[in-house]
Length: 185
Image (cartoon, rainbow, N blue to C red; front, top):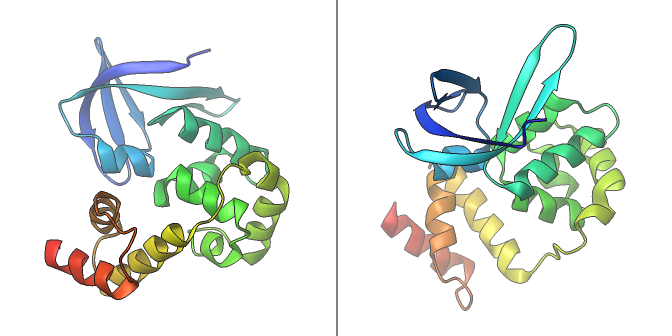
């Protein structure tokens, strides 16, 4: 079983990542954290899962162990397969998904592509106990509200998320957070 892959990123986009490992090129679909944190021509070690079936061989790459753990848990949800789990991880980071699950945020989960209200409820019901350490805080609520507001204004989600994560928002109101973020955008 392949557990880690170390290679140089040859190409990265929203819909594919190509990694050079020795003389081989591996194509995979990048997750949110890979898109957000990785650069072309840099070397990385990714967590991975190799799945084979009678139609396909798929190598899934993950930025870290937690993201890999989230993928495995999402696949365990009834009526949710590997492709759906990866689609979820392409549109939100694993930490945000864990917070949505632990805080019963059906609306937040159902905003992810391919996830309706019933699927969001099923994910929460089946995985809630797996992510108890993620307790929703005021800071997380404000961060999510600011992210949604700036995204509604037309800014790119990844860029806004990076700026908000870098800010010290502990004692700031939502309005001040948005104002400061707008100055950096």
